[in-house]
Length: 66
Image 1 (spheres, rainbow, N blue to C red):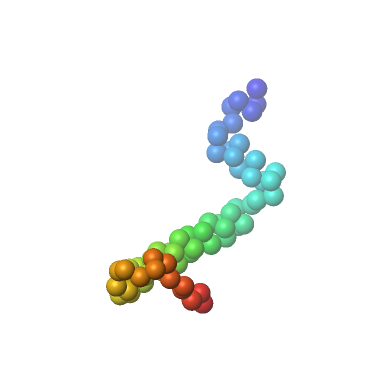
Image 2: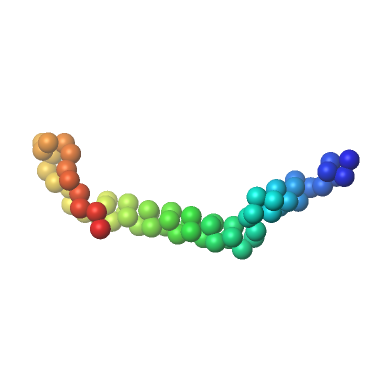
């Protein structure tokens, strides 16, 4: 009956703690995910600004990865 009275956020916090994920670790993971999204968006913007090769080639091209 006590579990029914707990709020959902408390149950989630308990579940995460039992899984070994504390607030500091989750904050680190969230930050890494957001930074990854930002890097992906920057890369996409850079790709959009590059001039495209003329159409009519083989269709695919080899791209150097840094």
